[in-house]
Length: 231
Image (cartoon, rainbow, N blue to C red):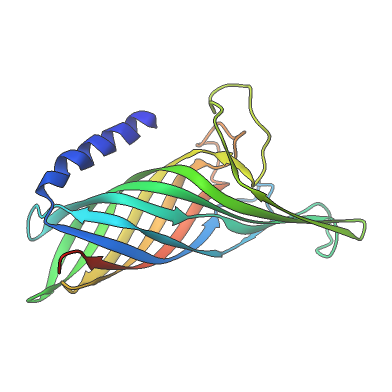
């Protein structure tokens, strides 16, 4: 994963010299995590957070282009784990909102709509590093409720070793990777984008096998607006 990160940095740096469009982006993320019937999390709900950053398009051709840059993007979920059949007692609710600096590299295909506007679709890999965030827990056992808020700690442990740190929604792997998919309309003076981030790495620090099943990976929809600089 570190080799992929280095490769994307080198490629995006090399292409940046040909950049014709640099734009700032900001928007809303609708974040969640994946789950399956074998997962410990019984229920998970969408968490509203944000994305913001600077991206560049390299002007390769009128039909095809590449896009890269840096984004500060929020992930997470509102998750619930029930320990008995009751939904009123014996549960742990977690609202966790980690922030990552993300480096995407997207390929775009463009379809003209008018003289200064076009529709585009995009897809490509991303790598990201955790930089902060908060986790709020609510526990209820035997009728007694406790609440706590903590700063998210990102594990520096090697996930391929057996010496793992404790698993919790406030203790996550520092590095994430996955694939982005998107579509939007570029009006020339602004663009509107709909995106979907498909996380491929399990987020908890003790989870070493990303392929064993499909639980506890980021799943994030985004709606963003981009404004080109210098226009």
